[in-house]
Image (cartoon, rainbow over all chains, first blue to last red; front, side, top):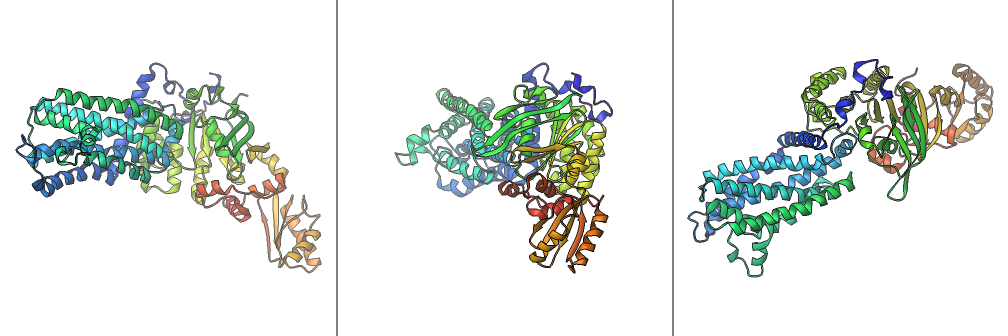
Length: 280
Length: 343
């Protein structure tokens, strides 16, 4: 390039050129950019008290609330000696579901603050803003699940179906959380600001989380509500996770849950990308 | 000489009605500083957003170092740096983390990014604050950090969108010195500003922008020569007296005086001599001014000379920007233009 010749007087302003221009692999840069954004998002999470609250204090409070306040009044279905064994898979799913709101809030804030616009002028992979956000939330969910497992153990939860099946249950709910993150990315990119994003998220999550087998058996609900509670995505994922963690037939339940996870990913990823293009 | 930036007939309309760019053309020679001068809402920021590939123009073409900003946006992004009035840095990250992040997103190796960030923090006087989150930074520190981050990949062309708007006097002077340092290093800079003094001090060439058009272009000297080097402002007891004073002083300035209520203003070539003559003439008619001032021409005066009207800041834009010193009405502009002190 002829243009570099004129700017050689000091080290600080000579364009380096070469490392900035994607030479070899676009995918390599996309991964590197995703990791950079992931790292940034995780650092930010550790510095914002409300994110730490949603990731730790809130799930712990739900465990204690259902175990000790409501738990005495709830009779676990046959096959569960302790309500904690019934409750914990529900708490896992509920925690990652509520946690995915942070995807919406985080993206919305970045948009509001003009950070995404600045990213537009950088030679980075544009997709990294979304993949970095959802990856950071996946990492955060691993942490949340570890915290809740420990709290669950303290209140009497025990793995009923072996460590491998329990691990499969964890993987299933992390996959589900990842799919939800993409859904909430759509909300974050559609809302005018982060407060609105939060307000939009709750009415969607509440019926899905509570009209489900997460905390009580569906057969105790009115007849008209039962089909919804059993077949909506959170209901299906709770049932499959519970089967993996407690024991019992799993194959068909897990397939249904996987179908929901991949279905939601197929729906939300293109939708999120479209909103992202529209807003930046 | 090669042109580092070429913009030809750029047009951009937002929301179907707001015509931000209405056929803007200019060229920036390699290694020079080019100032886009204009009030809020003139289209300066939109021009920068087009040139930095953030938005695509509706019509017209633009090239940065020969690369089309639409067709070859990836290549352009690898060659430019952008720092702006909104200082789009992450306030939850530390200064160092911000620069390293921008470096990594420019695809610098990890160790290169961290060496560069240490270097830049030092150069911009931020070493002590390097490991504090930006929440603790002052406005001036944020702008400096924003500028440092924009420089991390050694861009050949740097875009500065109103780099000192809203800053106090000292921060503004600090930043000017830092920008001058860059220019000595040979970086091509496109600067937008509302302050004639800023453009005058930093830019080799200035384009005056209004309502999406370039209405004048030249060196700061050329623009000011059209204007008269100094403005004589005289306050009078009442509008009637102002009217007669304007008649008396008609021949003193390079242009007839303009009357605004009970004060008049006129561009003059030789300030002190014109002032003496003006006082003598007024005294001869027993007119006693309430104020009498010689000052640098402001953006407002440039506009008055070029368009025959005062700048009208685009209120929507101005309010959104939320800056203290802006070119709305003449008071604001005058205050802004004189903050740097007399030369």
